[in-house]
Length: 394
Image 1 (tube, rainbow, N blue to C red):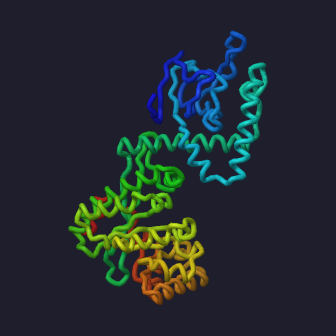
Image 2 (tube, rainbow, N blue to C red; image 1 turned 135 degrees about the horizontal axis):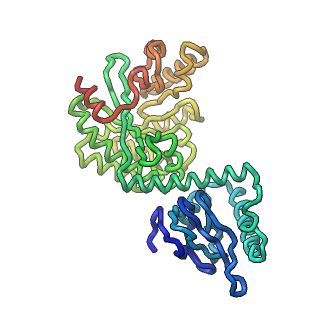
Image 3 (cartoon, one colour; image 1 turned 180 degrees about the vertical axis):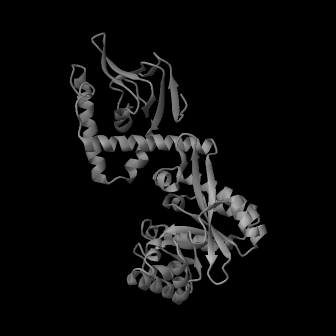
């Protein structure tokens, strides 16, 4: 049976049989599922599962044959949980956490065997469980459901791009745009990236989603450039998995070239902490430079950068984190930090962009400190492509 993120079973349909080997588990979205086993020729019900329940996960984790059978008691809609989803999460998990997980799973496997005699986790399903564990399980199930919806969103074209202008504080004109993804879910409504991008970044989904962002953003950029001229830059936020993908930079280069765009107009934003999370960063940044793409070091000041790294990597610009900008005019420490970052960038011959500018006072203070570019709600919130074209043409 081919993999789908959701499956429908009619009442009486067998979902899986005891003794089978499968690499998927399920979450009940709608309806009821009966878990049962054959005990000396007698069908013995272990549990009736309703909406929100996860089942089949033991065989998925330890890859042993199914210890019980599952059948749709009513018409049921199920979300599929794949082996890949679990393996990706386990690969990023702490080794001790993985060890504990497998110990717990082995315990559960033995308990399932005992449940045939009326004991074990299925038989105890109605008992009160530890609130913390129950909450964490619920969160994990919610994330798996959200991932299934993300996969559907890709197929159903539910993503949109908004763009936040980057202003030149000297000319008061738009110098660049930062592409920001938005998700319009038919069931959840408008979803901001903070609610789903961490999940995408924790899985392989971030690569195809990132490719969509680049493809859609470059199409829009051609229209923006007609209104603003070739000086306009466009920046994309990158996740670590994109940087580690061997296909990413060739895809970006080919897409930029096929649209006749100067690669120096395209900026790639990476978090400062990613400088230290992968051994391949140095080579990757050199490859970017060779292809003409500038690096913007995002959330600068919140990580652990050193002068050595800044000299070695030579980013196109540092982005002052909004937490420091917010304190301008309120905390002297914030002004000192902003001043230090700006002077450091000037000494190294690289640019500076201040994020999260919300007031005229902040904009003026940044300009007086020597910062030439800024973005934030004082200038503009992220806007649709049509709104950006209108603003550029005004």
